[in-house]
Length: 397
Image (cartoon, rainbow, N blue to C red; front, top):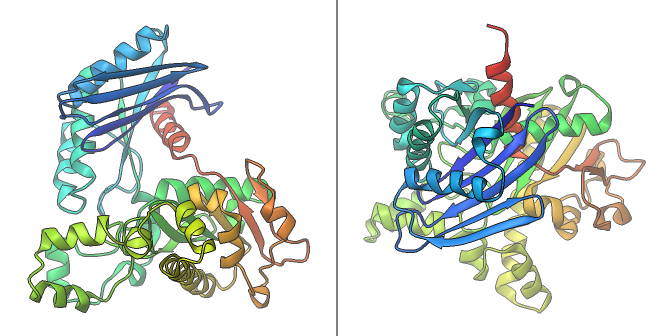
């Protein structure tokens, strides 16, 4: 059977999985961390076997050599595993990449050029693509873009109200992110409800350390909370989400430069900035212990989600489903209950016992009387990248 090697790389890491795209079965997975530092690390798992190594990994090319060696040492050498395609997650595809794309030199160069819009993500993606193409030269490589799913948004949803010439010159518009997750989750939610996705209006809440909401109208994104960068929208683990731009001008005039503002908004804000931890479990425990900062952080976090949920219910003209996914959305029953509290007039009613059930897997947690289905659907971006990559290379020419 054909297999897809899925790569999700950053500037100093390579996460990977080997997936059978037809059965969505994982043969192996791993992560290479601290690339370029004096002491890197590799963790590789296949079946019940796990390999852990501390070693210096100079760059992404060395990372792929370590990856290949780990597969061989685990008894699953990649040259015997029928790797039919390498699928790469790419965060920013701008307004030009609307679908999974075969990677050639031109595409790789464009991904690098889009680093201006995603300086924290695309440089690492590009380095990994260059290294992976060198490591697997006889295999097609496919880029799957986080922004592609949101290219169906209407112009009124992605346009910022600033001078048009300035916006065009600098690519200032809303792109949206987490698109791979929103797409696979909305499709799996439809499968759980036994209805075609093209018939459903859904609000998908991807709530993890990074978080976003998407209004999915019959399988198409019509609005999402993240904007030009993954910073806009919800309160996140370390990111601020929505903030008055005038506040940033005020801080700039007070002597805080652009790099310091970037550090503040992306790494020292969100739950961490409000409550001292970016882990929802820690913040919830502190709030239960009476910590006022943690209680405020949770109130702000929930209020922002409900704000977007209400807005998207209005944009969709009502919804057939509200779907929770990602680490916090899938595992935090308290949060789901708070988000959906007193929304009966929207037709949203949670069944407390179903919501509190710690079962894994996709499930319905709304009451039998709820007009809107409330679901928990685990996300699986890697399986979706594998599916889209295989679909592209296996399609009749």
